[in-house]
Length: 530
Image (tube, rainbow, N blue to C red; front, side):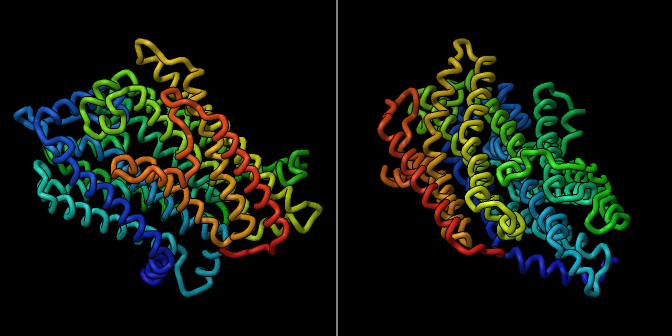
């Protein structure tokens, strides 16, 4: 059943070596790098206590977690680090494990790779075993490097033993989400459904933890994997029992995943796919309708995600003065003005709204690479129609996602602010970034049309804009760095004056680049491999 497990595990590491290295380095940079900045950001006990007071508000508690003090009532750098990083670091590691397991189970099975593997001298459970083994190894590496990295900083309140506990806690959380995702991969018949179930599990864990933290309910907190890790009270009491619980649940989840894998048929899920309609609806008679059918659930899911993120930022608006006073970083970003910090939240949401726009547009490339576009274009469908379907959904997302963000900001801000900001102000502040989103979309269309093998470059361009806009002011980078991204030309409404001419120019450039990309897609050869 498990023949050549380690051989397949080595193959997984061979395939994903670059991806894994980037994940590990990124997580380490976040976890260890942030800890190293704490002494500079919060040099005194008074600074840390002020930040603890800000985190203890219901909105911040829901987003971050509960605050735990030392026995003498002090609040060390370690306690502050734990309050800031525990939940969100675990969520990012969980996301890494979800993507890893889906990629090497359901996605490989859909593409026929598992069938090839099973034709070799391997067991029925070998691939699932190799996937989980590789996930465990990655999480162990992250746990050890995180623990050793934090312990080597010499920051007050972040000792070596507690640092190892924090790292192991992160690793145990990742292993749990890997095994749970393995279960969903057996239950569902395609990778998209399995990924959706896994994301819902992650989102549900976050919501349960938030509710438990606000209501001070140990029951709700301990039900959630993201809640139980906060009970370890790392860098204050350093309790190990949450690690044991997570590992025991992971073992049970892995056993269930192996059993489900052993009883289901290849290419099928335990939950049978519902029967489709006998006749296709009229809108599926064209490529645009098919694109909407493929993307409708991700579209709806992203709209709710942006609504939730908007509400998360909006919930902080009742304590803006306290948040600014508690952190030198926020003081630098906001220049002491709560409204400027609000515009920073709008910028963050606008950049995040661009992620689904790019995903929907690049789906045209993935359909081509997997050979599905060939079946469509071999019939009476034009290339313009094929690309137009994904482009139109991406363009509509440039309107819907900012609207969802603005509504989330306004609804949460209305509930916590004494003098709420009008919805129209939030809407105009979010909508002003639409030309920039269209500009990035135009770059994606151009790459799909002319450089299909290098469409990932648009993510690098997007990441550049994100890094420069967020960290450029802190690093003192020249202003022209930000101008290389379309987001760098957008004013902060309502603080800055809206330049209509700039907006029109960016929109026209986006339209021209998109049209050129369509022409390139029409004239080039299809490329059926990535």
